[in-house]
Image (cartoon, rainbow, N blue to C red; front, top):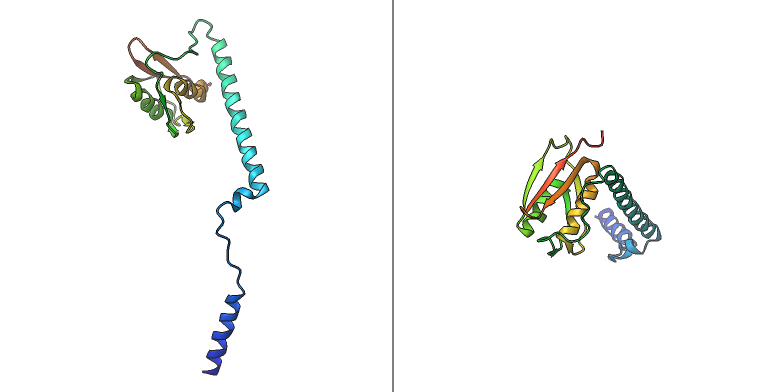
Length: 160
């Protein structure tokens, strides 16, 4: 009994010395290494966006007679917030549904789906469609026919 009492007292005194973990949720965000990592991730994301836009520009130089749409597409001026990470087809379908457009898939889709992402900032459907086209790169084009209210996803050869 005396031995048991000693073990209980020893265990109690050892747990009293234990350090309580902080419950501060901002502790990680105050860490300089974490902040540096966040800045690096943001810089990489911006660089990838610039690279995708430059690739899109190079692709458009090869098609000089294709129309360039930088203005808002009629019927796609609606401002929406649609955070998204998923396939190009699903994102295009969801955006088109906001404006009452139909979606058609043209060509053979790639074996691996084209993954895209949209941030949670509000933007017009037209701008988001352009963003999806840039992310698709040479793997697919997004073509909008405003007269027939159709959005086409035209699969390319994947740059091969």
